[in-house]
Length: 397
Image (tube, rainbow, N blue to C red; front, side, top):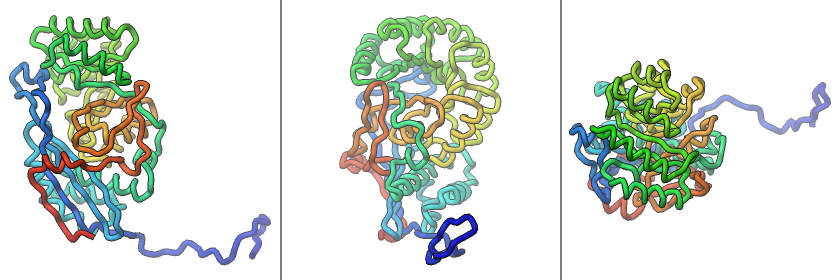
């Protein structure tokens, strides 16, 4: 033993920190899968009623499975509602070889490498969304290697997140059925209800919101979502009318690219404005946040390119004092929401449950972070049955 001046004894046999190679592992195998999840019934929101889109009947998913030389593995996904799934799969196939030989720990480096591999197609939209399955899989792998749920790896602020339901309130659902869905959602332990608005006749929207508020009673969190339906004048007038219902937020009242319009609307209303689900990069979110275009930011990790850019958006939103309510994909966003400094909201969709062997726990108005390592899910036999194409790269360890 040796002694230093402070009379603290240290063991001279302990080796010093020595310089050396930092890399500890490398990616040797990647698998991509394209599958289509059928919906039980066609789904319509305001964009369907105005002829912009057709009813949604299925969702395309691109899954990435990654394995390393040392036996670590991760799984991630991206998705497309309506067109784009096959294109995303093909773009992901083109950039996938760039992962081979990389250290899976270097997630930010790999994200940039994949982004620039397809940069001639742009750095937003499908080119970014095709990166998401790989990025999510790498974060899943990293958390699994640490033996921690992803939320704990990131540094959780809470073990559960308040959760609201959307799937029961689409415009294609008759009002009496919406009210039944509200009742069953509350019975299941949901903490908030969101319904769609954006009818060509705003009087119909008003009647539906009024009926749901009366069903819920005062104080229970209620949100509405216009899916980019209104122009600025209609939004200003109707959003003021909706303020009597004490809404938690009004979502996407304007076109998702209308920064100034959202900012003006947000500044003029007592009710919070929420938007961001259709933005497909950190840069697009940064522009929105920069002009104070919303009170709630609603990034979607698969749409912005994965968890790496999502964390950038989280940091910027927190710095600007904004609230967080990620869009869709609760299997991913539960972990990210748990790591946000201020209390966020999580969007509940049961649609994805057939894809996975595991289930999330909904209780007392909140979704609870599972204690399983990583994201905590694995693909089910049903997911394999819905798969229409696969591609592998490298050699399976």
